[in-house]
Length: 117
Image (cartoon, rainbow, N blue to C red; front, side):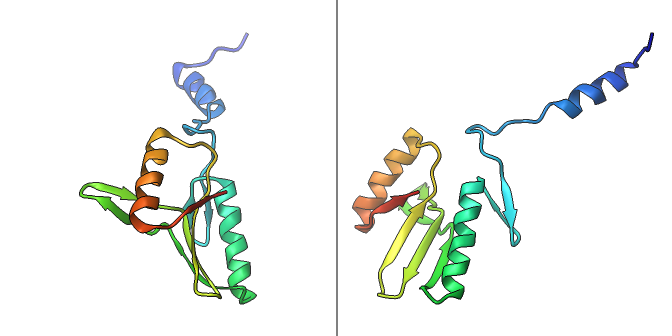
């Protein structure tokens, strides 16, 4: 019969437990940027290809918009299109009440629609 020390048992149980994120998305790093999900990282890679193919003028990662004093909104991307238009993109797996409220304030204040992917 094998006996484990308390330390051995803790090491064994801790190696089996992987902390899950709040919304079951795993953080992913690409090009030194950490994304909240694989879906968001994949979209970033698509944007890089579009930029290289000159399909878009550029894009910005997580710009900060001030909605009111002490209230900020950070979409995942802003895309600058060839026709001069911009798209505000939020890659969503789950819409929180806080996000829904900020989305409404953002769209009203800046007269821009958020595209959810």
